[in-house]
Length: 347
Image 1 (cartoon, rainbow, N blue to C red):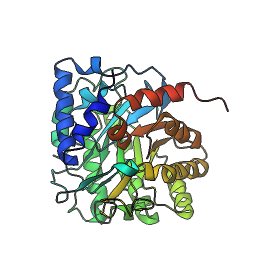
Image 2 (cartoon, rainbow, N blue to C red):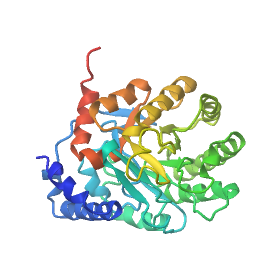
Image 3 (cartoon, rainbow, N blue to C red):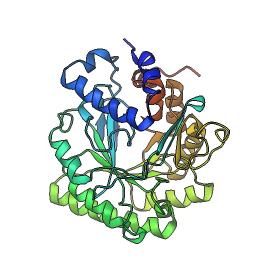
């Protein structure tokens, strides 16, 4: 039963951030009542082993939808193969001034400049303690890590390491987000010396924590779609050097190609959805070549149908993630993507 086409016009009449918050709380309420799973389509199994983890299927939820881990069990009812929450920072922060989230329906896109608004890593840990999904067989949970807005960029590694240490024993993997366009200078961490030093610090901490906990927890890096060929080659060399566990490609774009004329098309922030689809797929393909298969890739950006998921996998991704596509398509998208990957077209 697909109710989303009926609900979407009602949600789209609300301010986007208000609709977002109401949707999360509504999903959590339906889950607690035991109604949500009955309303959602059953998603077939399609097991995939990546980063040493066994995923029930290769279609995940990207970070940003549930920043504080408040609706993990409800989102698990959608049938995702894995869920990524966050971004979370060491200390709570309000994010950027509102309004900061904008729909571009004509382009099936969203612009956001949220600015890592979240209640901090300690609040997330408390929420994880009350989540059935964590520790459940097949419950693959990742957490996206950011830096606080007032942490100097030269101290950014400290923020990531604080979160890594606190979350290490609790979750399946973490993602170091160095590509959000909404925190000043954050993308500078994608540069050569800065990236080299950051990756060295993260992998050293991971090694210590692995010994301490008797468990290896993978660390992924999330990168921007706005990279040229030289940057991709240089970054890939560092990912291979430091044996990064996975790459998430990609975050939102700063480009406005094709949306400049649309209402809200001029807003600052990161653009996601259909306009970033080809850009992210190009980056996935380039990294797949440059990494020579040594680092798994999680493909994200502009997945609005099953064929889009297939294109990401064909470009070299091992797993995929959705977010903006869910806003426009609803929960049917998860099933459609898994079925498309289970039964790829005969070429």
